Image (cartoon, rainbow, N blue to C red; front, side, top):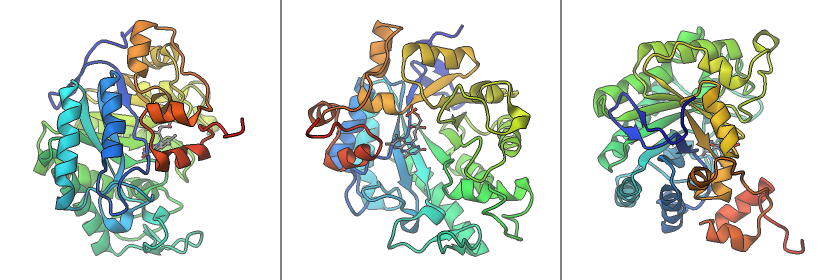
Length: 357
Ligand SMILES: Cc1cc2nc3c(=O)[nH]c(=O)nc-3n(C[C@H](O)[C@H](O)[C@H](O)COP(=O)(O)O)c2cc1C
């Protein structure tokens, strides 16, 4: 049985002091032009102080056209460097790893951006990226990882889940291309793999690199996601794979994979040196421990970390600790580092108590 508070060493040479990583959480607290704000800085730093072994930013866009949320932070301009560097150094001063989640919305870009994706898309009115544009998008991811490294981040996670750009390319339904980026799984994974290779070449092996994948739905096939995860693990270029499961302990949707939990499905792979993180419904000490007992190396905590910036510390003091149930009062959330734009977004998730309640 792995202890939730045992350190975890990655191939990059970084060590996470415990098994709790802050999940990437879009919080809409950046400035309208993508500049990282003091509010977002404070929100993340509070989680580092609360005992998270690694603190990841929200999804950050690598090209302005790939912006997917209002108030999203950008990683595409040099003028953002100072604010990012200050965040990275302060997270690290708390003995936590600083990780940037790199992202492109693709077909899910916000209004005002041209909707683009792997292929023309009737649902969104999006158009297919040209081969040259796919190459530019790949380069933008690598340049943003270089920015993360230069500004002092320990590493980056590539957002390959939730039907954003890499996930769109991985989907045989959304990706109907006939160039080197469409067709076989190998071709559909090529944008992601080319970014991984480029980051390794230009940021080195001591840069901590992870990939987030979805196992199902999102117009994906579970068998393909299992194969891709296994290939990435076998190639040994990543430090970790973050499986975004939404409910870690439920059975997969597809009949072929029923009989075990989503965690167990991916934990059964031959992962070699690549570490396995899982996200989804980790809301208590016992559920975090269960994920490790089912074979994960670490957990990513989302909503419980919004509710309690010091969730790991609370579990350390009381292994049976459970996140308090939402909704929360505005005062409570404000004390947890949530500023007004994030409050509005959290309302959508049923996190905010109604004023008259
Ligand atoms: C408010 C909110 C914002 C999120 N933003 C992101 C994001 O920027 N990137 C991402 O990969 N996942 C994002 N997610 C998904 C979380 O990282 C996490 O995987 C999910 O919430 C399940 O974990 P939980 O049950 O611990 O909340 C978000 C989830 C929530 C609730």
